[in-house]
Length: 269
Image (cartoon, rainbow, N blue to C red):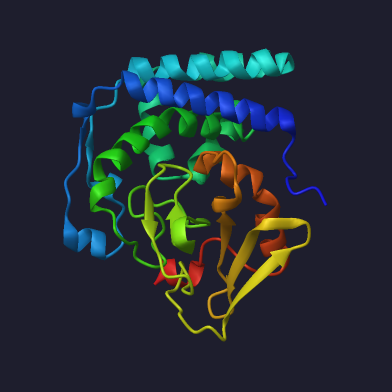
């Protein structure tokens, strides 16, 4: 059984993008990130990045998007014209709006943007999110010593990304990883990351034939799921973003069985 449903070409593209993001992050002055830890807000599930003062360099953000475009066009020359059209629209005012909406994961805005300008729907949010992540990852690096847990149902405690990936590390310790900002935190082996359910009768583990390193942890109370990867068996441990991408087949299996990565019932309350 083929474990990954993602093409080798797309995986390689993502690996190159991750290298770019790491280079970009090294360029940033750490002082552009000024976290403000509000324990009451964090305890209520407000992402720490929302409380952080970030001094975005807009020309640099646009420069990064140009670099992403060149990389994509190098791999997919047929996209040059469409990406060029997107770039023509990207002035400083639009870039500021992109940062705000990508930060808030406002897909509705990007859908409207695509429709208004007759663009492919994936382009603007993909470019904005890719160029935003070095800032989010720098926030996570600064706050990592303070991140010891997450509020169930609130997503990543730093960036708010829905929880969907955990790794079994040394001594079988379960550690949740955010593929977006790369922060991590420990969690009980038998607990639902979405609703906090600890009833072993309503939490199940689903194994996938031909995949000895991965399981799905699913909750029959809130119908949430978590991908659990035993990285102790890996010779070379990939980044959380690549691990998330390479395990997307588990997302499909979970969703086909009626489970979701984010529990709307909890986040709506």
